Length: 88
Image (cartoon, rainbow, N blue to C red; front, side, top):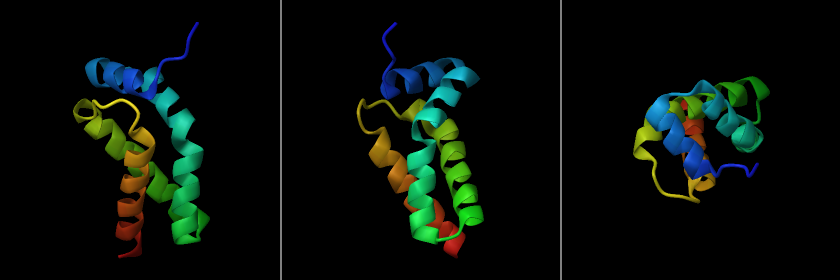
């Protein structure tokens, strides 16, 4: 069975709210998001909080995310904003 793309998973999640589909997205991207947050914050606990915030935002914004092939950049941008919020 061929793996579904991020765009397909986002569309399915946005349409159905299927938690297994969302878990697949998190699984694919959690290390990169956490790593980016950790590099920017330098503290594991704060990085975990910021990364969790990124995925909460993804869950909320999923219905508006329709372009294929952009999720990595979008997640990194949201991570930067989450880190800025954590620093404030």
